[in-house]
Length: 156
Ligand SMILES: Nc1ncnc2c1ncn2[C@@H]1O[C@H](COP(=O)(O)OP(=O)(O)O)[C@@H](O)[C@H]1O
Ligand SMILES: [Mg+2]
Image 1: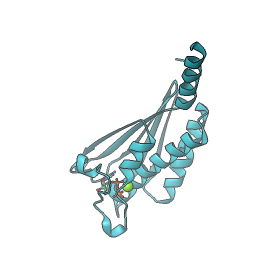
Image 2 (image 1 turned 120 degrees about the vertical axis):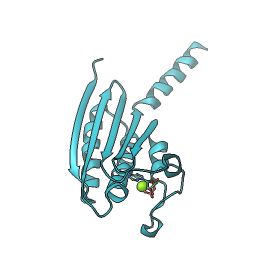
Image 3 (image 1 turned 120 degrees about the horizontal axis):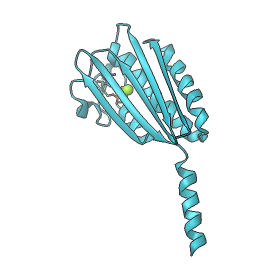
């Protein structure tokens, strides 16, 4: 495999670090030559996961958040981990529009956005120990699709 890379970033659960994490993941993913849309998808999904760790994972307490990312070929994996309160019922938490903090005017759409913008979403959580959100996205799918369509046309 010629295109592999990895990075690990640790930062405090402060709201200003959400844009810091977005910028870092964008710079890291940029080496894969993504489209502007693919990059925006990754940034949005990672922002949602980091915001969740800050707001829900740690709440009023401060803690550390770890963001890990791996590139293998045309696929990028991003993990966002906190050691916060954890999630009691993951299936319920992942339902569109579900939020445990309606008083904060949360939309309850964070996990739905992560699911929509990435190709794969996995959530692991233990109450009182923390949460890991792992997302994967393949870059350059449109080009491959366009290429195969063109190839098919050429064969007809
Ligand atoms: N890192 C986390 N730690 C604890 N709870 C979480 C975490 N991420 C998500 N949750 C729970 O999952 C729910 C749904 O998350 P999400 O879809 O992003 O909606 P929202 O953030 O708007 O509430 C949250 O309201 C919260 O209860
Ligand atoms: Mg959210």
